[in-house]
Length: 255
Image 1 (cartoon, helix red, strand yellow):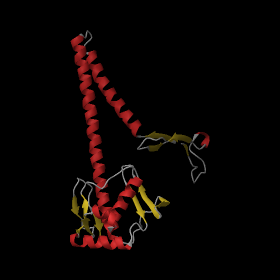
Image 2 (cartoon, rainbow, N blue to C red):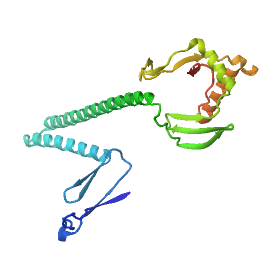
Image 3 (cartoon, rainbow, N blue to C red):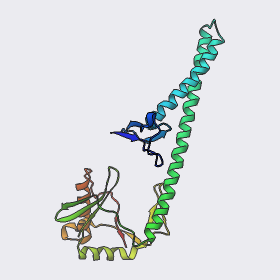
Image 4 (cartoon, rainbow, N blue to C red):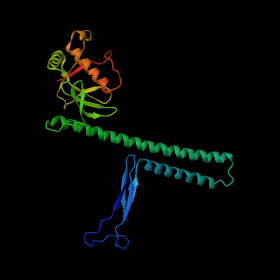
């Protein structure tokens, strides 16, 4: 999409600062690249930048600097032989390598800095949302979906993360069966630590317990086995993974 930037007349004079007191205009076009930034310079000149433009400018500057070094070396060797040319080429290569290494180092530092900021923000939001019982819940992105007669609300639907709420997913009898099975195993619930493990959090007050599912009793109408089967059925309905119960984690009860 292309947009127009137009100068507005001065409030006092009612005129613009362009030639013949006309209002100056410039245009810019956005694209699909990331980190797009617009600068409106003096004279109503728009400078548009994005990730690819920044990378291209950085690479061009690096090459120009290295070319300058190579030219200086060439000027010192009017009668350059093969060995001298090879030496100059080696210096050019080393210059480029050092420049790229520095750019990568700076990029990694920025990534680490941004990741640390996001982590701190996430911790703050976690503490706040868990403490504020009146905070608004996430609005569903999709409604009106039905699965086996149950209303489904899609809260998040991304390739790597999905959150769905399903009304009446389990019956009152199944709920009581889960509570009873979990009761002797309940302990303070934990949160993921980002390294594959978990730890306790002051913000989380719930209890949790893993419940082993006796699949041999499924055919006999075991409530927990039936509920667990429904969980697998819905997961396989949402994701094309064909997950089987063998080798999976216990059914988790959060209370």
